[in-house]
Length: 356
Ligand code: ADP
Ligand code: MG
Image (cartoon, rainbow, N blue to C red; front, side, top):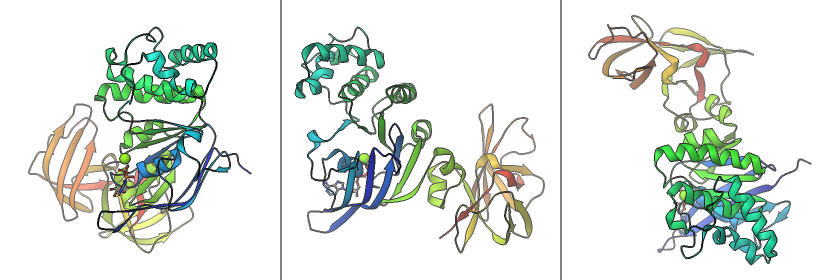
């Protein structure tokens, strides 16, 4: 059997609100995480990401289902006896302790000998790039540095599974981008299994070996970043991974290597297959998968042009609502606000998406 660090089997969590009404925060979720894998739980606010993570950590008990860490069902094991560690959005550092004492805390609790603590703390300070910061109080560090201390404190106990709950949300944009790359580097260097919760698709795309996309407590789609971006299994998945325009189509024929579709009388051969079986489909076109033209199946009026130097964004009014087209230079001077244009589809990057 395949080696797994973590396995969730039909896990559900039902909360009751103050009037006793049931809230199914997590609804029959199952997935496996392999040793050393970086898996992201991605989805909009309220979809059950944090609740799932808290059940893995042991702060919540599943209403139904099993959670296996290294093949042991842990649902009745308290958090401190589970082999997990968590990094939070608020760093949660102890202000009256030095950086080194903060990092050493978990090892002390585990009664690790003093000289080993010192060795491991120094080694982890190096991994997170904070050599020489051991004696400083956390308050003298920047936000990004404090987040690194929190990461070091979680890593130093060498947990089987490292858990992150939106750890970068409090950092400014530049630092967030930097820490994103850092977290990935450290995770791969240490070779630890990680579950990372975020609502930010860019974070998920950058960091993950695999993404578990959630909606309303359920798994909407699971796959590599590329699979979810390139082969969204639903309109929700397609939209959550980035701006996309949908056009209604009729399927003419599904062949072994392509799909023939009709959009308003124009027939297209799309060199890909529907992302899954359904009764009804739409054509999904990312803004970079459309062209502006003097003819084409869909007519639009240019509402807004956003010039970004390396590309221009055109927002069009069409019979299918607003359509966004991204065009690389050179820009056609005729395509100005108020003008009538037509939209062409680039078949190679169009997707046939289930609409059910
Ligand atoms: P996310 O992290 O994806 O934003 P959460 O897991 O925090 O979502 O929450 C999922 C749902 O469960 C939400 O509707 C939330 O209001 C509800 N919820 C979370 N924790 C509790 C709780 N302790 N009591 C009642 N409802 C809760
Ligand atoms: Mg959350």
